[in-house]
Image 1: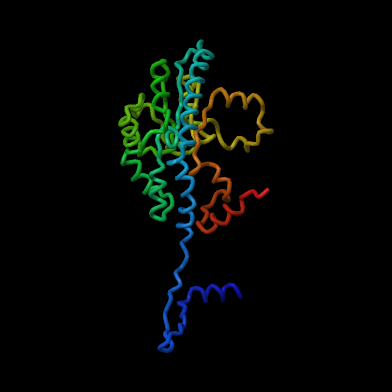
Image 2 (image 1 turned 30 degrees about the vertical axis):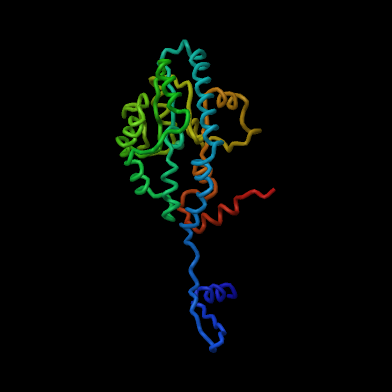
Length: 275
Ligand SMILES: [Mg+2]
């Protein structure tokens, strides 16, 4: 009761009575409402987006990741030399090949949060820049006779502008036949299995663990990961940094229902570990 009374008072226009030499003067000071929950969510992206766009550390991590990818490519080409199927490398697209941080920056500037419409607009511009190190890696794949496939959770209607964006950077295998986008499920397992029917996947590159294997399989705690799986991750998967969004966020909210922006704000704070 006391809280609701307080908020009512805060919402009202306050009147300040100022004393001046000529007597009393009443000045109306409007109490501005605080930013909306959407605007606050959007604002939480500022530092991660700035780190992504401005820090030398992020560029070095990406370049190191792709240097590791080149090394693992060579190692795995030897490891899978006797394979009957042609060798393939799988890459995710967003924050793995293409840098969509300008889209995040626009959301922040507009006090907006992700929407399929604004995302589609950005994708259709085909103007995303490349992640540092990716171009060299893809050229090494092509030069080594290893085919590249892109498995992305961009929706299937966005195939053409996606392919165009990759082609603008002259990336190899950027034709629509090498790009598997999302039709029904965001779980990439099915699309990986489809590719495995014709190719041996020797390496995967992504910014989410789900770019390598189904996220649902385990909660990643080092002690609980069997050594064989740890070994497989080390040999077959290269991970790129993405602090702006990702599967980690899904774990914060209740499953199966849409979480309201105000509730998201609260759940994010509650999920912080303080010791
Ligand atoms: Mg991605």
